[in-house]
Image (tube, rainbow, N blue to C red):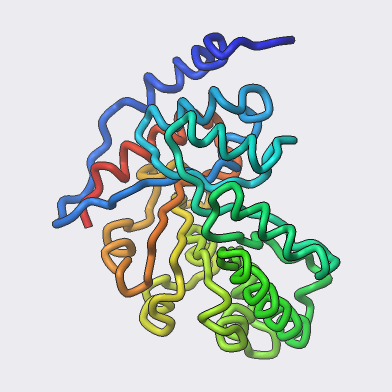
Amino acid sequence: MTVSRRDFLRGGAAGLAAAALPFPAPAGDERIGRIGLQLYTMRKELVREFDGVLGWVASVGYREVEFAGYFGRSPKQVRESLEEAGLQAPSAHADLPGDTAAWPAFFDAAATIGHRYVVVAWLPPEQRRTLDDWKRTAARFNRAGEVAARSGVRFAYHNHDFDFKPIGGTIPYDLLLAETDPKLVRLELDLYWIIAAGHDPLAYFAKYPKRFPLVHVKDRAADGTMVDVGRGTIDWRRILSRRRQAGIEHFFVEHDEPPDPFVTARQGAEYLKKLRV
């Protein structure tokens, strides 16, 4: 079935009405600048209407997006779609090619789109069983950072909760931070997953200042489930007021399995636009 852009955008109308309901944001001193959306939230919609989704994302107040796949489009086509929508994509999630000889072209493609960061978002279980596995990963990430720099982009890693599960008394995420060169490897801190793992982001901001230029902003209900930003228990003012210490440059709203991605995206934009930190 072919869906027109008009029909597609109408499809989210019911959800948008609910998302437009006011939700109080804490009072503070400053507002966050440019707000971003991790497009994994909208992945099913992007398959159906790529340009229409990007245009809608811009229309509700986002100025940045982070990709998690390009849906068959070339780097040039992706860049053109971003320009048409008036968006920038400072980062993208992507798997490093297994062959290191392919890395230069891989990072060159990211630069063509306009990315400043390329982020590895996941480590398969076989690469994280032992501390030696994590040390090998750190060495690989350092090498990736060197190659990325030659293309004018930066390399980063995105965490889940497994990064904080101790192995022999050592937290793998801490080992990764210690073994990687801050000039070569940046961290995208997923604030939902670090809190789900029982750790305080502020402790990491204090111990590793300026190492977290990117964050994922997604909320957590009292029962641990993922909910739309501003609908959960995470104290966003407390965390994001320390953004300068952390070095945060980009804030990406996300929900892994949103019941209605239009509601999720709009709710996140509205909440962060009101939030004062």
